[in-house]
Length: 283
Ligand code: ZN
Image (cartoon, rainbow, N blue to C red; front, top):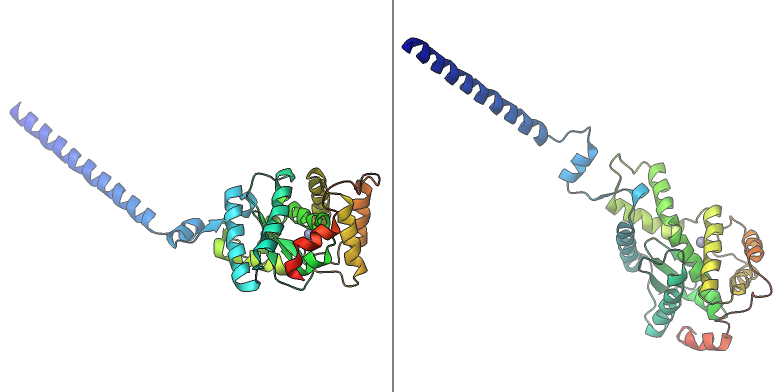
């Protein structure tokens, strides 16, 4: 009886020791396998290196605005100079802020800026950043014409054209990993796309339609959009932001189909003299 009890206790002790050893080994192997970054999981690799990765196919508003802000920082510090005159700066922003609430994407913050350049140009990046050049402001005859260009650029942002363009460019150039796109690469690409790459024909036509609806509901005379485009064609050289495709004549025809001739000239922003005095600092 005594002996049996003793043997039983030894057996229990041995089993307990064995369990202890096994669980220690399991714990150790878990530590070893998680501590080693596996090349089969690139995101883990990227997190360990502290790289910020973004998913362009599923980019939230907050991330898009943040990306737009970083692109804007680089554009305004390295690529061009913003207008210093506060009257001009305020005027451009004021027109944009009048349009934004009646755009098809009113729920993000917008920033409208005037760029010091003789080139007739306008562009947008993503997350609410819109730019017009002083050359374009001088060419416009009135506020409604300038608003039509700004409305078109808001249209690009509302339809997320720059995000889609960036996604396509990143895939085409092999910059996207399974985890997504490195944020610094995205910013550089965004700068490049904003100033050097025209949008597709479909994107331009869509931005025209959205812009027209936007300026109309904000109270501007819709005919101003056609007037300004015709002025650009009449100038001889078509500026970069009205890229060669789609042909500007196609865009004008598409807009004219949308505008009721009877109300084309009804709306605000058609006082040429008032406009000239607002942009006096540019003359
Ligand atoms: Zn455009």
